[in-house]
Length: 151
Image 1 (tube, rainbow, N blue to C red):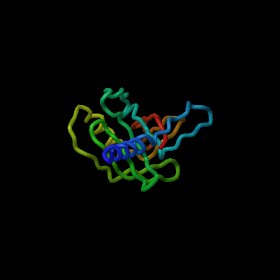
Image 2 (image 1 turned 135 degrees about the vertical axis):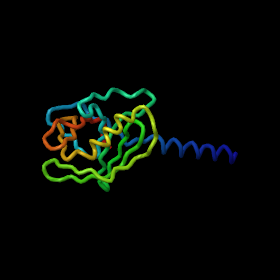
Image 3 (image 1 turned 90 degrees about the vertical axis):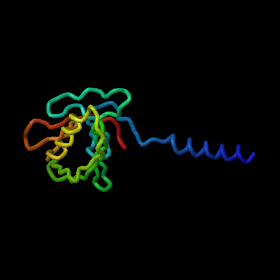
Image 4 (image 1 turned 60 degrees about the horizontal axis):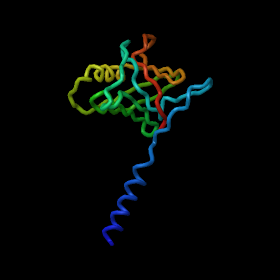
C-alpha cells in the first residue's frame, strides 16, 4: 500500500511540475500591436542577406531571447547554445558583449558562426510589428527575426 501511495505522489509531482509552460503564443498581428525586444522568443529568418530555412523536425530552430533580468541573452545557433549580455541605449541602440557558447560540431556551423558575428557587430535594432532586425550603423540589416511567443 505504501508503494502505491509513493507512486501516486511521484506521478502527482511529475505532472504538476511538467504541465505549466512559460510560452504565451503571440496573438495575430493587429494594427497598433507592439512587441518588445525583451522577453520575446525571436526566430532567425535571415542572416547577412541569406534566408534561413526551417530546421529539420528533430532540431531546435535558431533563435535568440533577450532577458530583462540581468540583461542576459540566450540563443541557439543551430548546434550550440549561446549566451551573453546586452545593454540598451537611447535611439534603439544595443551593445552585445561577453558572448560565449558550447562547442559542438555539426552541419549548421556556418549559420551559427554568422549569428555570432552579427551579435558582436550589431549596434542598433529595429522593431516593426512582429519583425526584429539587428543592424550595424545604417547598413543593410545584419539579421532578421520573427516574434514567436512571449515569456
